[in-house]
Image 1 (cartoon, chains in turn orange, brown):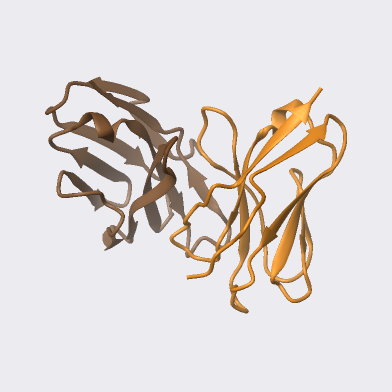
Image 2 (tube, helix red, strand yellow):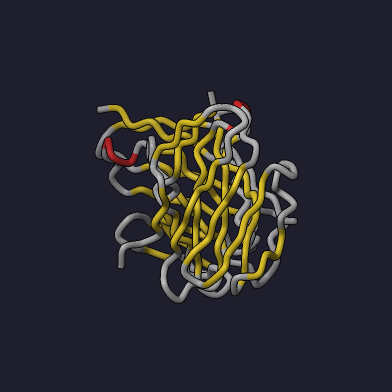
Length: 107
Length: 114
């Protein structure tokens, strides 16, 4: 099974961008990269996914390396509501979660 | 669309009692997943179904746990007998196809076994 590696935590100031890296060096050529987040006391929430090219939606942007061995989730202007655990999900449709990155946003 | 609906939101039960957690997936989603989340172990996949058929139950802790999906709109996770170490938040999630378009989680059931 493919594995991912993420930093345990990151801090940001409000209104500043946040770049969350994920290493997925064992990903295969046809597997999507998914990102989810979990706010306190809530279930995980889908954020974004991509295959090869960079992707944007109303929540975030996903920058995928050309070799697809890593990706970066970008929160363009962090707000206090973005404080959550962010998971980069291995390309496995059983959706196994790791520890994720805990994002703290300072006012 | 009401999303994935789980019930109850909170359950407190005594050790040894039977507990049944319920989930209604999003209509049209072919995959349904049950997860358990604790501080110690994080989010763990217990079992998942495809077209109402259990595909992988290797995450189910032991024989006290069982899950069923009698039809496309309903699934249950049962614990009998319950133990204090089963205390956790249990999430249900559903997805269409193999999830390329993402998975939708319910709000979870917080189970406390005393």
